[in-house]
Length: 192
Length: 192
Image (cartoon, each protein chain N blue to C red):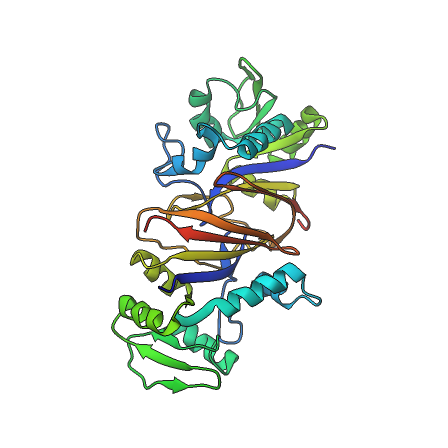
């Protein structure tokens, strides 16, 4: 069965975006520092390999409404060329884009993950958006965490794991790749 | 000249202690999960090597008053067998312990680091306590960050870098050691 995964570029102090995220600055102030490794020219070969691998592994996406609202105008397409499921309270018709479609799920996180798993086949379900990730963790549905650990202290911003309502979650490190500046860490979720 | 360093065992979500730290539970609720790697029996050889190396590197300590108040009864000695400087507003006489001494510095963080550097010789000045570390970062005095990254999401607790008042701080990864479960990462502070 497909795994449910989150993939993030995170500062050493735990931020995945800077403060004051807006449509114009979706990564917030200073948030672009977290993605320099993706846009370095030339990109370090190991960073390039990880980015390609991680992208190829994605079979479906579950994203929050806010991530959709902020991201859609920037992507002008789906974020990955696969079926994408938007977790929302407002029903909307399916939105067909160039490389995939957005389907709006109003029946909660369990349903969103269930339909995404079915769509992903053997590939992973990628969860996007801090609030949605936190709901997926709370529901015990997260299988894997991939962190591109960026050597910077941002000081302020949006954290991926800020409001866990569960008890602690045990992880097991399954891979370490030393990129050019970032460190790519992969963890399996052991206890949920 | 000696480097000023911080060494911490941190959860993937950035906590260095659990919530509700007290003298009876100095690591807070669940905080003991962060130090399992130190007390594992048998300890993984690479974890053992890093712990020994990091301990041997310390030539002086700067710690906050709260860390002193909570730690002293537990250590029943200095935390490292070297000169220790307590940053405080309340003057107190030097306190001689079995393996070193506590000197109380009331003239601020710059002075505390200056006297600790002089005492440390070629070894590092270890800074202990989240508030003190944040003051040292804000003063541009931190040279090195050592993180023992623990594969757990604690969800709640005390963060090491929670109230940085500076702009972002650029780091450079200088070492990665894969321990038994934790990942030991070392960073040089590039911009301060």
